[in-house]
Image (tube, rainbow, N blue to C red; front, side, top):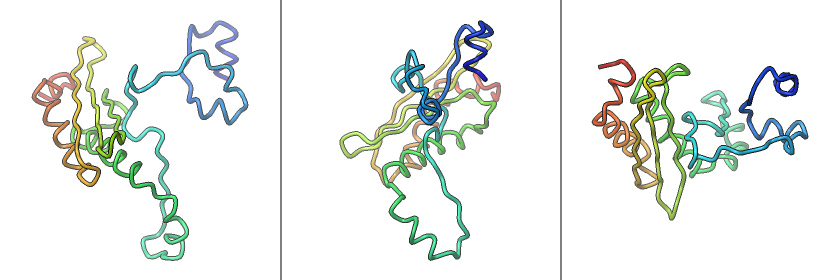
Length: 153
């Protein structure tokens, strides 16, 4: 329906998930892709989670091969930024972590839509220390005035 509205001129542009377009066989309709270098996503975007009962060992064993340690570390770091800044769907923050050269690279940003101001940071650390990496990024963002931008200071 959003593509139809675009075609009718109801929108100048729309941002859609590339995965959704691909699933619908419409990936050729994409005219541009927003890469993390151009626009950081919200924390946890693109990572899938599967929830099971804590005592369901059989299902846990079946799902174990799907648990990617790099994705788990990246997602933990991103979610740590959100948690550290009181993130929700209404808080203008972004975080993106990826593994580069055996290290976890985390980039994060906090903005203010009304003023157009933003602060950003980058932190690099060990894969097993995603929470500490997130804490470092949050502290740096706060030092730069993130809480003021979020109206929390």
